[in-house]
Image (cartoon, rainbow, N blue to C red):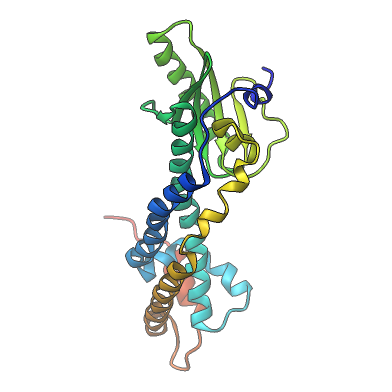
Length: 260
């Protein structure tokens, strides 16, 4: 396979204005911030403790409960936010492709976006960044591409179909993967927008009311830290207020009694 990307910049397509980008972000970015808060609201202390490595925090010589809880929550939120923000970026990419090439959310399993440029149908699996999966997950994506191609060709056997793993940020120096392309960052946004600078144009709108929303989030975060710290003190600290690491490790890692 040879890269199709250079020819795309020469293909005329509709454009997306800065005003349209701002409007989309304004209408949808609030869901990202709301889901962050909802994620905190659903969390339970003991669920959090079972998910994180107590040895790591002991190794860092953490002795203050609020510092421990804050670290646990931040570790939890990093993984949560990647997923939540990934959903937002996927929606933005579909919006852009719809505006420029009539793209749409695919009905095929594992395929997020479909659009056509000239006589080529693109099927796209969208990921946040380039390092998103292990070999089994990549194999599954390839299988989804094969199935989607077969379904499309049932309706039109002459359609030229190109499979793309589109990553919203990052780089990949070798986008030609043989049976699909992996376009990351600038290359991906250029593919769906026809604009080599589009990846820069979307950064400023993301700041829409960010400070205001982060104030609300930090208030909620602080309240959860306080609540969990109080619960932790009662459950996992000794009478002098020191963390009982043996009890904490036993809680997360001790063998469970077998039924019967």
